[in-house]
Image 1 (cartoon, one colour):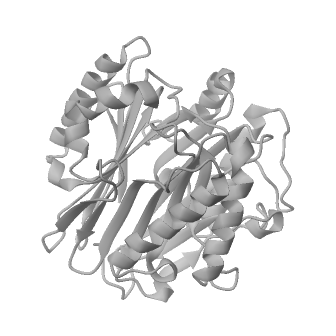
Image 2 (spheres, one colour):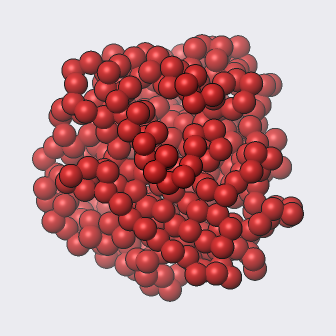
Length: 393
């Protein structure tokens, strides 16, 4: 059963538990609009600790977190020396510059897992000399959860070359865990500096990468979000966060499509799934890719109308969820991206009307892969599911 709640005025949480598998926790925290960055770090740390205390958790349960900054290049050093940074480094930690729109200069999303019938074992690794690129592998009785964060290619002024290097590095990470892209990788987040200029180069590199890895429209692609985001280092144009699960068999991974509402992504030349469902013995995870105001012919709907684009985006997500017998109340969290800072109040108003008031929500400024799309939403649903597969985790 998924339960959502607020803890104070700035923290939203959801919690899913069964008698067989682990407990999963999703936490979203925002800060006061008028606070300084140092003040925001202190607020986040206090509110995060309050959330951990509420659920009787410690940082051993942290699997993955993402911090959303307003000015990464100038805030990185202060962040790296902070208490909250040290807490979150007990799991994989991603940091991206996407300006929070519903609070101050910093927002936090965190995913934690606890318990189950067997002890969870966690291994943390660094993928770069400075530890900024990092990963966490959490192994349970049946599966292992592998998350990579802040993975980047070598510096290059060529976004295509940097994308190729990034995907090659990701392959090495997956290989090192005894996993493969087709068998285990489920979800990616790809952040691009100046997406309007660099998206096509990344798409070309990804298509070639998937061809080499035998990911096609006849097999499956990955659930994904490709979005504007700045790294804290100006030399990098692209970064990657990714989620994989070891121990799956092919029948557990199901494409999530809603052809009445959304076209196949291949119709306009990109290679990702609208969503993926992963079925365990006690629950189903439904990963909803970055979704926008689009129809089943691949056309942008409601040009220039951010309110109706937001409503259509939610309608598309409902259609995807319905194929898995789920609805918006089954969403464990949302991330909302608005292209234009000045649209924030309109988007927030629609979200307030349409989604559960307590579900964890991160709301940031970021351009979507087509300039005509003014808003994008993504997230994950969890629903009870009974099968002969082993429970999660």
